[in-house]
Length: 372
Image (cartoon, one colour):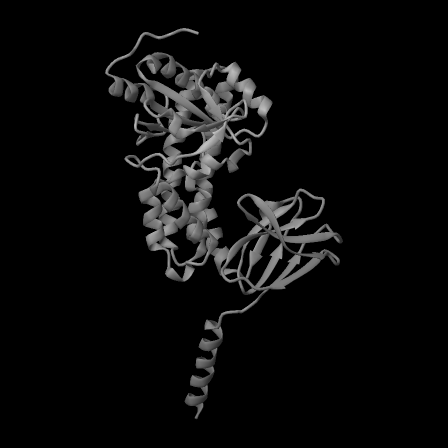
């Protein structure tokens, strides 16, 4: 009888431990802030969306509800620059937010968030090295030391590659959680199509409804349409005078579709290389179409004039939401695609000497540079 009783108790524990919560409850504490409005929010394509709100009572707050699948949310305090992220899931969660030391804030009760914290711990040493190299580069720039800047750039490139593969490895290892596709999409600009496809193939099918998995699959479909060998998707966008320009109207030339913005320092650094390529090869049939991620028309026009970008320019002046940028899967700038005269994509993201070498290969030598 005793053995039977113990077996039943043990079986009951297994059932209760394996039972999934259908709702979440968040019990939160914000030491040092006794009253005020607290918001539970999330982001959708860069826009904040309020999920719930409540008032603090002696520094404490409570939220409850349900989510279909775990997702990243934020506790925000009204009228304060305070935003604490964590993964919400249907469970009993406790949150402690320290307003003056956000890095010391913590969450318990969310297994998904525990996985995310493990990722943060793994990347922390590498992030410190990346930050240190960036400081070296910034100092070299301030002291006008191009050799030191080049060394820092070289080290930075190596560290970026290490970070890329750390993220990929972690995403594949934790394919059974939404953290996998979340991390890939948060860093999607780093990954090529085959890398994205490898992660998507590994993600558990139970997570197909996750917004991060859906975003990953959508990005894959977008990139498939703009790979080398594909016809360049047609688009129409207004030029600096407000006149519509069709991509197809520029057929017959080797065309560089150049994604940039006036506020983008790397873009401005790259612009002289594009100018030199344009002046060198335009007589042989090379052209450029600038697609700007600007929001301020006057700053856009000034940058065009200052950098002597004498080709056609288009923009919808809505920044990162630029319609052509979305169509071509652009998540970082400067970026570009090179099209042949029939507007097939023949290369992507050619910069500096790489662009010159490709154009020399296409045109079989340089034309006489035409000065302006």
